[in-house]
Image (cartoon, rainbow, N blue to C red; front, side):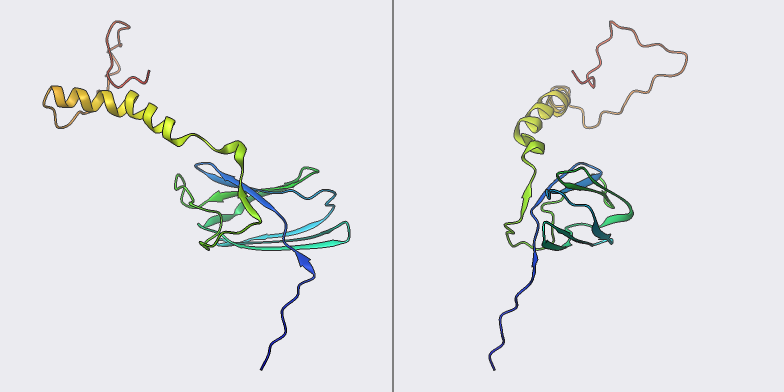
Length: 165
């Protein structure tokens, strides 16, 4: 039996996304959208609209869970912005969707790409590098944080090895 090829009258819109520690921001660049449908659940997102006599439909099965009640969306003229709140805060998503296959319509927002290598080297030198070096030189296994009591005032002349600087 030969099955006919599935044909859809709907197009898939382009998706541009980025993440912060707490949120995932999805941008759908469509011009002249007056009305759209958006449904966000814990693990997926549905979007549809009609603009310029073209129908768009999108289903995204998300990489991580989100808090659907805290979703914010707005039409800013040239695009639809969707702000999703991550359920697992400070957990970076490796990709937007659960599927490992490359999707041509999904891209990461180039304006929000950070140079991770330079940031980690900088942080290792300032924080971890100095502390670890101090611990090695003085044969210390644990450094406990110093909590000043309420009647003690810190002097400006004292050197704090934990100071970021």
